[in-house]
Length: 207
Image 1 (cartoon, helix red, strand yellow):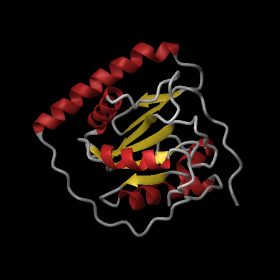
Image 2 (cartoon, one colour):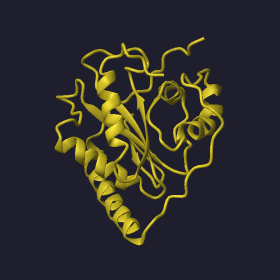
Image 3 (cartoon, one colour):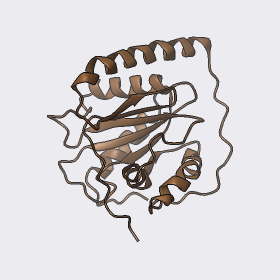
Image 4 (cartoon, helix red, strand yellow):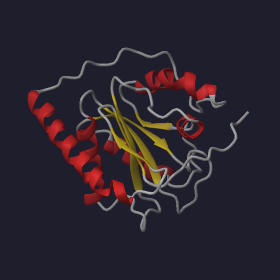
């Protein structure tokens, strides 16, 4: 459930609905400091994307490009109220790569913004064991997972995905030497994480 008193709630809901229609995007969660109850009007809006099968880099390219074009992409010097698409995973691989206490705290507080295919229940089921092993629990419950649609993949779409993946890996490699120690930035076949500022100090689990 989204708390209407959180900073930027209306904006997050609006952009969640709009971005959920972009190519490659299957679902969107709201994450970060605001949904953990630590946000302020100066906070950005952290977004976690679930991509359709085989469309991880396609989804990121469309999301980032549209937000940049419309002046809504968070920047280090301009992030208050802007959108920060910093995590992407691709179906059917819903398990998070990093399973430390900070990740448990971060992901247990996610809130669905766009989920027309009922992916939330699958995502919670896939990650609940390691999240609970660190003393956290998902703040938004999930019903029993329903069957997911069988998305069609075309040769052209596969070629575009391959091209965009090579481009994004190249861009990341160019900047990797400038990242601070402890940065959580990577691109794999199933997950993209873009947390250039080290964040690994979880708060105590809630009772």
